[in-house]
Length: 200
Image (cartoon, rainbow, N blue to C red; front, top):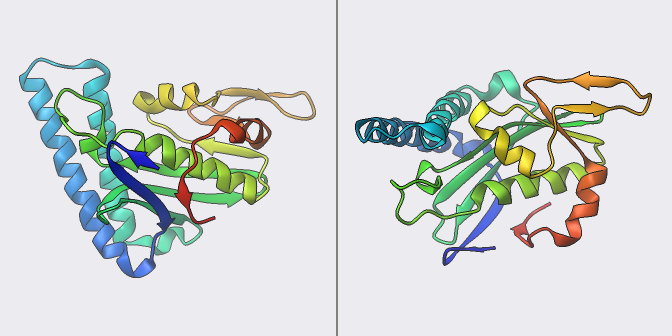
């Protein structure tokens, strides 16, 4: 996919690169913290500040995960790179029964829509989520579950994720703060989804 003049590719993360990934996530954490401070100095709050704050939190957790991944060996890791081989995003997930569970979806804080970012690579989050949805279909899972921070909920809701759903027996469930989407719905959307260069 071409994003603002750059092609991005999603590939499985190599375990041997986890230390490098940890350093990248740590650098993103620092960038996000710096941008939060800059916004506060300018008196800017709201969703813009929340997004960088969430990015800082997820980056910190991912940096730690890549340093000590043994406690979560069930996770699969995918890396989004641009055509210059710069990492622009991470996706981690695991599967359990009929569920495909996204544990982290993160983009470089330089790509967040903000007055502080003059040349962001837009669409990285959408491409990562689109990839995850296709993986869930390929793996024949019935539901995708995400665990977003509050600032990211609108992003997922725009893509059809909901907090409430009715299962096949007619029971209503509340998975707060989880959001759910069916792969049946995803299959209906695939024909109109973006074509991206990925390895399935």
